[in-house]
Structures are given as C-alpha cells and as structure tokens.
Length: 250
Image (cartoon, rainbow, N blue to C red):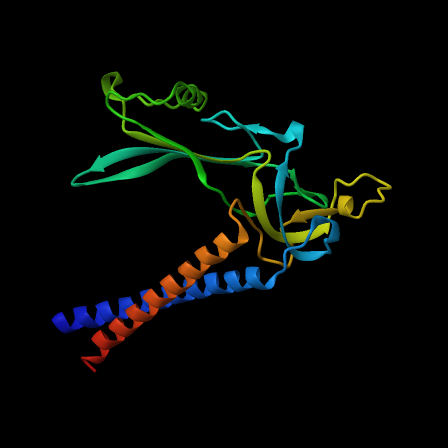
C-alpha cells in the first residue's frame, strides 16, 4: 500500500512538474516576443503584429461610468465576493463579476490610432478595493450599485455580510502598452488620405497575441521573466522529486 502511494505521488509530482514547465515555456515565449518586437510610432505603423505605447484618448459616446468609483473610463472590471464558511473551511466566493470594454484611441507624439480591445488580454492595476462586515458598511456608491444588480450587503436580521468589492479601470490619459495586430479599420471615413485612419489595432485572425497593459514594457518583461523561470524552475524540481520517488521502487 505504501509502495503504491509513493509511486502515485511520484507520478503526480512529475505530471504537475510538466504542467508548470510548459506554462513557464509559454511565458518565456511571450517575453521573447515582446523583446523581439520593436516599439513602433503610430505614424509609422505597418500592417501585422505591432507594439505601441501611448495615452488613452476616449470616444465620448463610448465612455463608461465605473460602478464603484463612478469614473469615466474606456474599460472596467469589477468583482463582488462574499466570505463564506462551510464546515471547518472558509473562503471567498465570487457572486458577481462583470467587464466592459469599447473602442478608444491611443495617442503618441506622432499621431492617434483606433483600438478595438475585443479579445485582448487586459492587465491593469486594481484602482479600488474595500470590504464590508459586521458594523462596517460599504461606501454609499457601492450600496447604490448593489441595488442596480439586485444585490445587498446585508444578511440575516439586517446584519452586514462579510463582502469584498474590487474595481479596475482604464481612464482617459492613462498610458498603455499594446501588442496587437494592425489591420483594416472598418470605421474609417471614405476618401481619407491619412494612412493611420485606415488602421485599427485589433485581435488578428492569425496572430494569437493581443495584450494591453498599463505597465511599461520593461516592467512587463521583468514580470514575464519571473513567471517563466519561477514556474519552469519549480516544474523541473517537481519532475526530479517525482522521478526519484518513482525510481526507488523500480
């Protein structure tokens, strides 16, 4: 029985290590792609995979109002969680999560280009987080928003539940790094003589990478390097330990 358990544990460690190693390779390839792709100015954009950096310029009629901070934004993601207990364990449960994104422009010193964030992996810093609990109400704007979603921070006998509220936004003038595909702009005005007006950054048909971040390229590369070598290294260690456990009984 002990023999079978150790062999099983060894096999699971090897499989887990392989998964971590493969994920590490994914981050390594992504890092290398970012390093190898030169940052283009908007005026010099060519069709295909590009990397640009600039400031968000909103399209007024496409702005959102963020749920908790009530900021004008081109993107928001909010999460509402409740702390629940089950037996001896307690954990956070997501009870509502919603994201909104729409077209906006990105501007650098050479021009502006339209961005369609549909299908992009968006990474932005969390702008707002708060909790409510017994004797502690959430902010009034959070309470108002909960009502619009038929939710409440109160539980049995009107006592506050332990809940957590998070919000991430991208607002006008935010600086963004974008790696995506420069393709045809379906919204361009007929007869335009401006080459940039005929381009829209979007998720490509053949290019898998579409990434939007409020970090600078150097920060992104460092983060991906840590993930690649951290996960890859852990994967190798698990594979070695698992192999040793398994080979002891062969």
